[in-house]
Amino acid sequence: MSAPNLFLVYVRDAAVATRFYSDLFEIQPVFTSPRYVAFEAAPGVLFALWTGRSEHATPSTPRTSEVGLMIPGSAAAIDALHVRWAAKGVAVVEEPHDEVFGRTFVVADPDGNLIRVSPVD
Image (cartoon, rainbow, N blue to C red; front, side):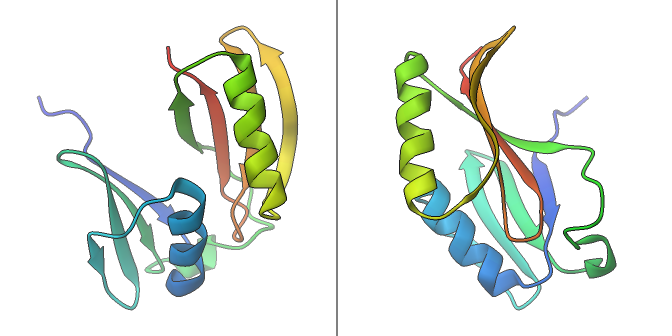
C-alpha cells in the first residue's frame, strides 16, 4: 500500500493562505490555481490549500487535526522559531511548553487551522 502523499488544508481565500504559508514556511508553491495551491513538502509529497469546501473553512469550525512541523535541534531552536513567528504577527494558540514528545507550541493560520511545531521524533 502507498503512504499518504497529499495533505489538504481548507481555506477561505487561497491567495491570503498562500501568502501566509509561503512566508511562514519560507517555501513557494509548485502549483497555483484560483482555488487550489500546492507546495512540495518533500519529494512526491504535497501540502495543499483548497477552497473547494469553503463552508468548512471558518474560524468557528472546530479543528480536529493539525499541520505539523518537526524541526531538528534543541528546545531552544523551537523557542527561537516561536519568537520569529510571533514577530510576524502569527496567532499563537499555545505558547512554547514541554510535552511528552518534547518542546512544542501551536499557532493558527487565518482560517483557524492549527500548526504545531515540535522536535523531530
